[in-house]
Image (cartoon, rainbow, N blue to C red; front, side):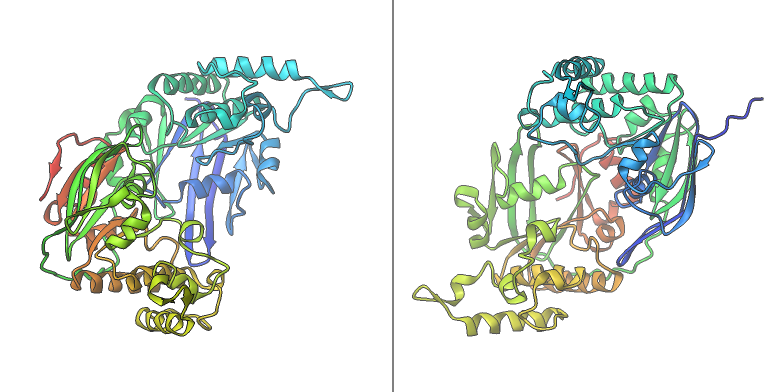
Length: 504
């Protein structure tokens, strides 16, 4: 029996960020010419492990062996020189350049000191043709759709001298025919002996393209299986097989009347028409994998993104014009997923960030009553236990947990009846999480309705009265607390359970 030496070994990889241990002695072994699927829940460490491999991060400990030699690229460019190429979830194109220029960026063919534009044009056309993409290489990337940009990114990777290709959720924006073309390009690489590491949440893709699959959980590798010999149920069990370690206090609160009513809210190509209600004192959890439409749902409810259909009512009143200003006036608040980019004015003070949505309360004949504004901010800082050097401290200099509490203080100051929380504990330490959980409990006791979007299953199962599950922009079902389990939620999130369940 012939024993094939691995093309890649990653052994004992450890990587920490402030407050978060992302990788815990993670391991991965990839054979030549195979499609090796990397599977796990959001935050399991998949992308971090690949960024270590491809030079974007430096591991704190561990060893990487590629083609029989120690590999420690100093940068993504250094990794590409070694033949390690990664296609990221976040597109990495230059909008002002054409498709062809992006495909050959950094590797332009030059003759007599001049770039050979026709060679770029023809080479790009051939690569795009392999992917059944008819984009004109002379088209600026800024004019392409997201799916077309994704194919340009893939074509750029295929142009290079690849010895190992990493693809992180490459099909999120692609049509079925585009996915088939991509799979054929992947198989072509594998026939040449090039291994492909394929990250995806879509189980049907795993069985269509994968040879072996490695499952990660909480930054650690929990098992590797042959795809042909593995059942979906086994993969799901590997992904969620932990017990809920954190004891998250669930406050038993009597719910009142519906205060948030969403009816047929939709946006073509993004969000299927969605209907549900949330009552005062209730926490509705929203689960789903990356790209499932959870954040898009919250933004549509708040009026931050346009919609094609449907209505939103808060305490029985339609939101006029369905704009964020109308939502705030009606008592609807939104803690965004990215607090630094969308939730905070980082170079402004704690006071200014807290009072941002309630400035009218301090206006006297067009002039701000600064004393009253500072008093309100101080009250909220004391109430939420925000640790800041002073009310004048810039938000950028606060810890992640305190930044999140500043955003929460803003909406508490606005006396919201409904709060949309998108990943409220992402990137904060365990102590800060417990404080956020306590605050959420206090809110529902006061009759506030909470929509809690979270990638952390223990968080949803510990706090939510019901769990709504999204898959590819569609609400798959709403599970009552008594029927919500990690396995059932993940089945719905992966589109494996087609029996719609909607708990009132």
